[in-house]
Length: 101
Image 1 (cartoon, helix red, strand yellow):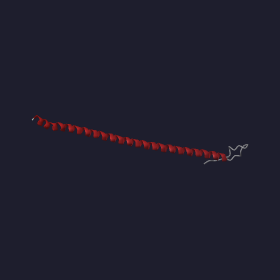
Image 2 (image 1 turned 120 degrees about the vertical axis):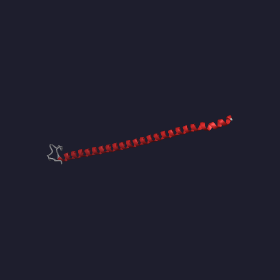
Image 3 (image 1 turned 180 degrees about the horizontal axis):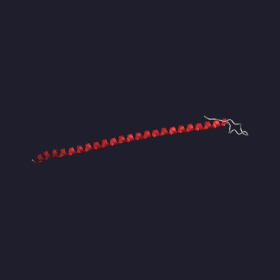
Image 4 (image 1 turned 90 degrees about the vertical axis):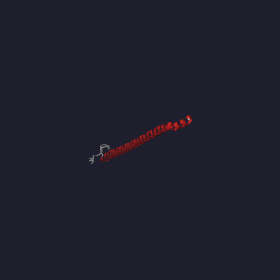
């Protein structure tokens, strides 16, 4: 509540008039509202940034999963090569025996 005391203007000075005081109060009130709106906007921006960070983290997790899959694939390739190596000498052996005869 604003209690405005009505005083007669002194020498044409309107600063003590309740009307100007009310305007000044309105101005400060508007400024406060604007500040609050700005703060809310900043908070929203921060939330958006947090969401972006979360998305980035999810992307990083996906990348890690992909890397793990690649490593597993490499592992299976090495195993396959190893099996091929084991199979090769066995295949060559009978051919050598035939040549000797």
